[in-house]
Length: 429
Ligand code: AMP
Ligand code: GLY
Image (cartoon, rainbow, N blue to C red; front, top):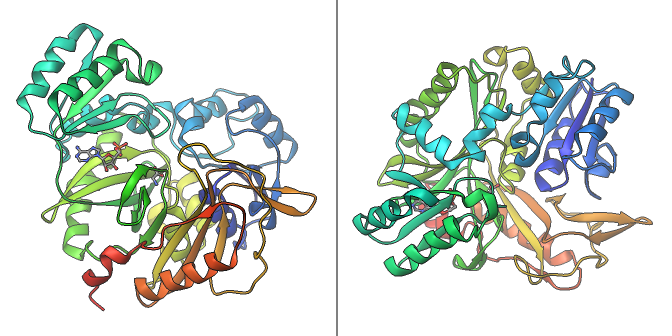
């Protein structure tokens, strides 16, 4: 089978690494990929959003399955593009169509969906330019902190959490009247602040049945101790010690099952991943957000823990026989440590040569933002590598990731040294 993965980050490298191990694979293509994915398959220099170029590639390389990594092409309708094209219509795409991708593409849609299907989430209301005064009133009724979310995709920056009412009103005005996040904030969701600890659960569905993949916790802030600016993710761990069986059962019965049934009821034929961002509020799960794709760097701990043939699971999605497939998961702890370019998530420089990648370690180095230049690996993004290690405990795994990160060098390298440390005392080992 010939497979095409769309995307260029650590998530796509982890997918490529895993799919390359499948007996069912013939050729693997990654578009555009990075210096790491080149070791798993063939990189093709086209952008995931260039649907016409993707079409040409699928045709030329006789691709049998397309796995979409990032949300952008999904929200823009790549799956619908395939279904509406004479040449592509029978080529399966893993990832929802535009209707299902709204779970991530529109916060208002996802909140309405959760409300309709009684899925636990923070109380909310949505506002537009026309209803801004009601928005101010709604803020006055809430207790701080105030949570303001741009309805549409805003490159992960569309959520503001503010302690002060005047500031919250000012930001609501900026979003609705001054287009702070462009068109994405022409509608704003205001919601109640949830107190608790966050984690993510990942579901793979064929539109009828589903498999729950390993859960993970992501570390979003740039600095140790969860300080500083928000990033795309500085590290991840799986399993999550506070995600007990009891808690995960509640997630399945109160969130996953109603979500899958809700999609069926809405006649949304969803084939792909649902990434559910959760808040554990005193043992009860609440949905913070849905994403229509896997997380990054969460994928770099979730995928390595999966022992089953991942391509076979994806085939189960295509043939709607996921319930007949076996999902086995390693009981070991996995940690991913993200190495970034100094300055990230603000301004940073690219094109620094990387050394130390050939030193033998017990870790797996997933490339996130790299490129090859005459066989040299150069930095090419804010997040450069995700270093995944296994251990009997978080501590054992993270020590390996830290040792590996110490070996790898490039100008202005930076990483957090406390990934998973907050959870070490919570472990039952
Ligand atoms: P989102 O893009 O919806 O995931 O929001 C980004 C981040 O904002 C989440 O990962 C949470 O840390 C935080 N957040 C969003 N909504 C809430 C909420 N209702 N209560 C507390 N924190 C929230
Ligand atoms: N790590 C968070 C995300 O992928 O959205």
